Image 1 (cartoon, rainbow, N blue to C red):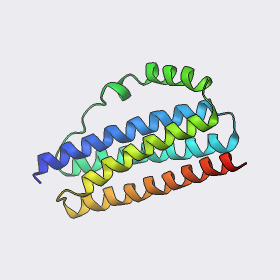
Image 2: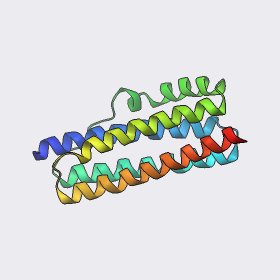
Image 3: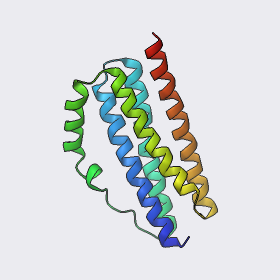
Amino acid sequence: MTTGQVISMLNDLIQTSLDGELFLRTAGEAAEDSELKGFFSEYADERAAFTAELEREVERLGGTPEPPGPVAGHAEAVSATVKMGLASVSVDRLLDTAEMGEDAAERAYEKALQADLPAGTREVIEGQYHSIRRAHDHLRSLRHGRRAA
């Protein structure tokens, strides 16, 4: 992979992290259950840290992080829309939607990890991928636990 291709891929992952953070933060604000609030808040903060780390990696490679795309670029409007939608959504549906988002993030990271990446870049992406997998497993556990109760 050329350096330009790696930078482009990293910018795609930045957008994935921004979108995930927006959903998780908004879901945390909409959730009434303190456990869910904590879950969503913790992982939203983690996605914000991922974004910063990916931006540093883009800069280390000599690139410039791209400005956020349409979803993150209109965060207030999207956040308001999501909040309105979440206000009428059951906890089960909220968890299902969050899990679908985590599935999409996993796929984006898996695709990136199939590429021929510089060692330092691979380490960053692998670390974030494993954290996303842990969050996904935690989410699935919460979802199954709530359905069993």
